[in-house]
Image 1: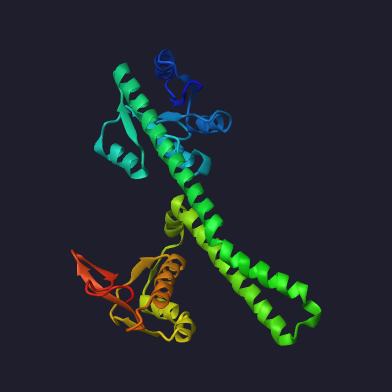
Image 2 (image 1 turned 90 degrees about the vertical axis):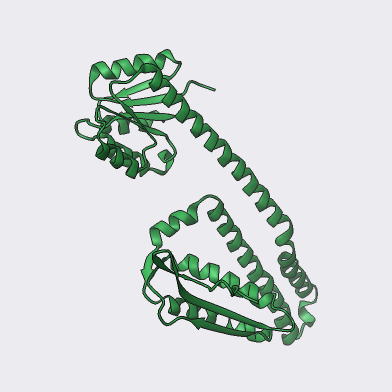
Length: 309
């Protein structure tokens, strides 16, 4: 493993060189930049393990540098420490609001600097190790799905296709239609499994959280979204002899949701409810109501009810 690489963005030359000397003395590889713009150019050629940046710099200050670094997907995990002569609460709060991990206030003790840098690098390594472990688990889950869940629909597709090809000339129109319907059922099941697999990957990698942040909007008529989703499962419920009903509070408050994710989650609950309804009570009821929790009104099912029964 090579030396940890640190990018120091500091416009005051004596301070810049002092930082470089201290860090190199502890075995770090150090690259320096005089402002945020130089730091960004340096990062294109030299991906650091940590960025140590002054706040007050010409052309591009530390705050702007931090936001620019975090806007790049390939740099988003690089730890960032602010080095500042300011100790005012508003400056610290501004950095915290942006998500800055640590501050070091000038003048500083060189040993304090080393401790903070080493601690931040160690935290980043731990996070990376956890992420790699979770990724390995995800790969194992994918392998399990591919090995078991995909086998049945593939059997449908290959089985009906082979039967049709073996006796194609003698098949009646009705028989051919039956075989094609079997192939389509298998293909539809494969499509659903692939979509579920992609959703699992998005969940495990945190992409759904980003999707929510990017796509979430305030809905003034959540009841309409719920009713629309329930209607999509009316035919499925009827085919299984399940009574499907929806009960929506007419006074639901506006809610912040990502409609795509909400409809997908609600649809899965309804689908499971239809599939696993009890024999003596083949009914699925979807309820949405507003309840008071603390000082806010939330939309949630009442505690005495479940999503399906």
